[in-house]
Amino acid sequence: MAVRQTRPHQRGAALLVSLIMLTAILLLGAATAEIAVQGEYGARNQRDRLLAYQGAQAGLNDALFDIVHGSRAELFTASLTSAQDKEDDSGFPHDKLCHADGKRRGLCGADLQNLNWKKLELSQAGGAVVEYGSFSHRRFTQEGGVLPMQPPRYAIELIQLPPPKGRAGNDTQTGTADKPIQHLFRITAIGFGNRETTQVVLQMLIRKDAATPGRAARAQVLSWKEISGWKRRSADRK
Image (cartoon, rainbow, N blue to C red):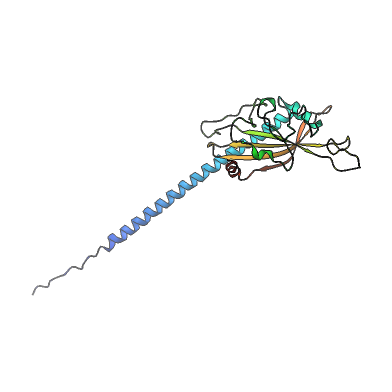
């Protein structure tokens, strides 16, 4: 009597396992590619911001040169003997506004409470801001490759602090020989990245020491900071 042999039913388990493993590999590859793209995007943004940061630093340095050695350095020297209640040879407006043209472009009157730099359109060419090299005659390389789209710009505010209160009768507006008015300059500079939307604003407070026999004029940096949230501030003005 012949014995009939039966084959076990094949249910495709190996095929199913293969499909699951292939799907897992595809998902893992897609996740790895997404991580790589996000990393490259973050690195590009960081590089662009660093470019804007360096541009803003270049703007501060150009403003320092403008104040101490530039073609209009005498305006800042004249401000050391100016009175707060009048317009004088320094060219800083007494009404705390900003000059928008000529040799006095970008010079603003201010005090510690009146923050004139907040009202300026630093990101826009022209107006009451100074473009890099305007008074220092330096060149700023821009555009092409990974270079900034625009040159840095800056504005300079004159801050006049009254002398310390002393004996009765001292003039708190003009000061005295032993207690003169303190003159500080607040520089606000903006730098751009390879994209115009990438902007960094830096600010510096300095005091200029006038030239004396045997010593050239020099600037002393008193404080330095980055203005955070600049794009939001600029959008709020609009």
